[in-house]
Length: 156
Image 1: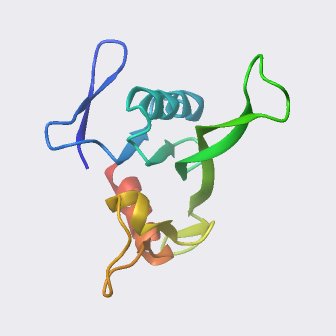
Image 2: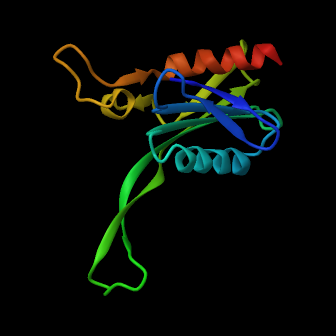
Image 3: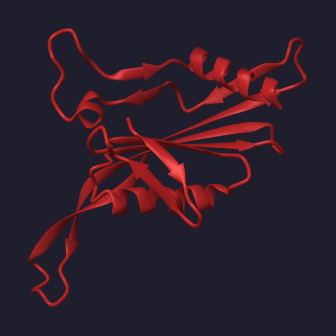
């Protein structure tokens, strides 16, 4: 995974190590709408070399961490000016998973309630090849996500 750099009005990729295939974008002051606009920009500017984007929104007012997993997938789209039976495949970002982790201060000690299951990252879009015999998808467990949220809130 490469490193993204925040520029004056946009975001630039450091692709010196090769094409970017995944991107993690986190925000506290940015809205989820702005993070989604950034995600669409990354897919477009990379010419869809980016295959997976993970958005993480830290909502301090609601004591919530929202994680979204987006992937570029082919969608059949009608071609302008073509007969309606002719279709062209286009890559579009599709939301495949949403996880919400909420800080519950009514428990002692504070707990973190997660909905949406474990974060599942498929092998092929990450590594641009099929998995070998001892390789598989990357799965971030619910417990690991809860620990992540605990660390986020301990920083605030």
